[in-house]
Length: 500
Image (cartoon, rainbow, N blue to C red; front, side):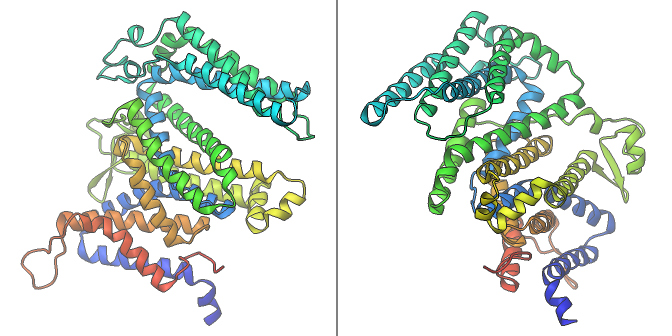
């Protein structure tokens, strides 16, 4: 019996906390109110999990505390909203990124395969320096005078406050910018590879994919206006699915870029990782304010979760599959159906990532890399590439959560920091580096926030008292910290954390 308790102590502690919360709720509130609060907690827990899962994966494999993870959540929310409600901003900026990345990749592969080498010594350093100066000049030429404000301007109708024809640049000027950025990317590709000493010759696949990106960028140019109308003309459900894909993909790409450019050189310097990722939070937040403005936006709920009529709310989940009402009856109280979707998305991601980690070759490599990265490298596996992939996967999960949260809580420059704080609390509760712990911690934090908000709203009615005890709104935020303190007192490494 003692061995059973010792082996399952984390799960038992988590179960005890959950039973305590549910038992207290059953006594304090009537069933329909308790059920509504429970579902609200599960909704928040699902969103927190999408952030904590990636945070836990990144720390578990790379020992990197990514304080910019909330920024990736926010970036995903903004990118998803942009695709859903204002695609012209995306269509007028995405080609710049594509042509720049494509040119870097194409010329980099060609430079290595053709054996282009800068001279050794001082002359080589001068050549590389000149290339970087030229690349910076071409980059400035490509983006100089490009005004984002009219493109980001959105009103109550499609096209925004400024008509698309007036907001976006003429085709000739836009193509000229693409040409300048393509030249800048080509020079960057040379600067990065003319002093490369690796004996491994890159495959032509890289050059082909780079050329495809360049062609795609130039192809989007003439289709910007018609592309906007085509996207806005799509069914809201399809646009929402595209927003989920674009938001998650953008977050994954940004996360991979951050790991490759900023985190990779600092693996042996943990304190610098913290400083860099903290700096990214402030810089990224200001960039988002500069592009989208300091005010927030509200993303409409897709029609699939927003039908209204005489049959609404739906009597149960099965009936909802046919009527798609905006709410579902839960013990006589309507609950938004979109929040049920968020819960389902969190559960789906939990199962999917668990299968990836436990049943796939990539998952085996990731788990082996956590245990002994040097041995995995000795077996011929590119651990650095795995690191980048895991970082991108974690960032994509956070960005997916941002898109899913947009119709629920809206989009504003502060949501990243809010979810970052709650994610760290959840990770500490569950145990640093534990995927299961991340899920349990996120669930406990979500339930604590939901019940904390209800306590602030209605107070606590004690026996023998005529009026309920009221609390400050700060109690709702403090509830998650109190749970974290309680868990750490009982188990300092978190529920599923392991001793060093």
